[in-house]
Image (tube, rainbow, N blue to C red; front, side):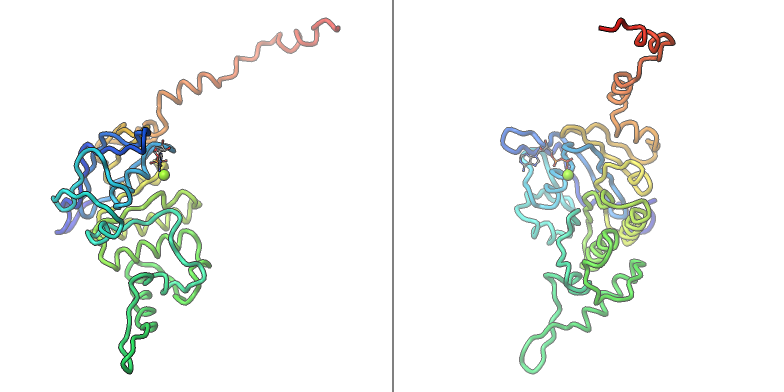
Length: 280
Ligand SMILES: Nc1ncnc2c1ncn2[C@@H]1O[C@H](COP(=O)(O)OP(=O)(O)O)[C@@H](O)[C@H]1O
Ligand SMILES: [Mg+2]
């Protein structure tokens, strides 16, 4: 899937990274490398350590084992602001939006454009409207009315606006925490389309999901986490959807469960034996 000149540049890498919360070892010995123009999927069940991993990348938590490098330089991030300054943008599942504010205000939230007028500074509303419209259109997002309160958009559309926003403000890395978890099939497809649009714009994307089907539709690399450890790391060429699904579902665990849940074969005389039970 990687084409174009700026591709294959290493954006960030984790080597043997670990993190504990008190006595809980949430993550250990995790390694991952992200290149420009690549979608790297991180899969795992609840509690596997996915959120912890992206919080480290996004500067929300600091790793306490291993190496984290951005653009080849080792970093120890202390805040999301630092990560953002390095070009790492994160779209969380519970998007930080102000529902009653128009789409364009949310698009520029924290990065408002001003205009100097008559010695004062006022918001350049028309400029921001136009820029929002253009930025969305450039991503192929068809939203006619950027004055709509963002709360009136569907979950999928809001994810799309957040992705367009990260691209517009120059992110090199886009981290998405389960962007399709709460969405139906159709909306998931739309969000995944904009994930590939971000990739085509040259960003590196870390896509967190527990859905191997969604991952396999767009992913170039797949990292599986299980109870805080890496349970697999495969470039797309080395793994098919079926194997990914099996690994994700914990193939052997499932086989065992299916054995335990299996009904005993109905024996022809079990019904009659009940009828024939002596009455008290
Ligand atoms: N702030 C925290 N304090 C203590 N334990 C935590 C905290 N955050 C996560 N954990 C624990 O770390 C493990 C990994 O959690 P998390 O990274 O949220 O997994 P996932 O996102 O894959 O569901 C879990 O056992 C979870 O209970
Ligand atoms: Mg999580």
